[in-house]
Amino acid sequence: MLLDSKPVRIGIVLSAGGLRGAAHLGVLRRIVRHQIPVEVMVGVSAGAIIAAYYSAVGLSVNEMIEQAPVFRGRHILMHGLTLRSHPRLKPYLRRFCGIIPQRLEQLETASFTK
Image (cartoon, rainbow, N blue to C red):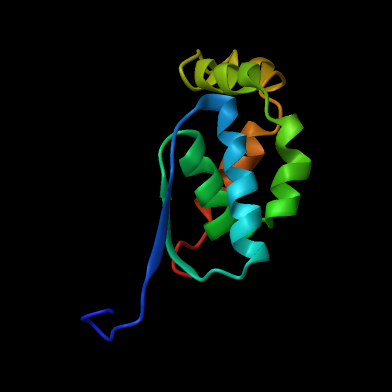
């Protein structure tokens, strides 16, 4: 028996794991399927990326699953190198970053207040 009559608030934490972080999408799919009301979602590394795109950008779980093969480790690495490169090299290096720069731009205007 609950001692407190307040409604239960559910939060989830998504862990790191590099590209293996895509496994969190299966968890989110189940949460959505069972209509579990999640109030807070946080993560670290890959988990933070998934939490941000789901919560702030508004991509559905199915959209993220469909787009998961586009995310490559080398794209993330190249994006990191691009950020630290000489300004003249940046346009050349960006061609090897895949969709990472576009996805990060989406987060710049995202709202985290759902």
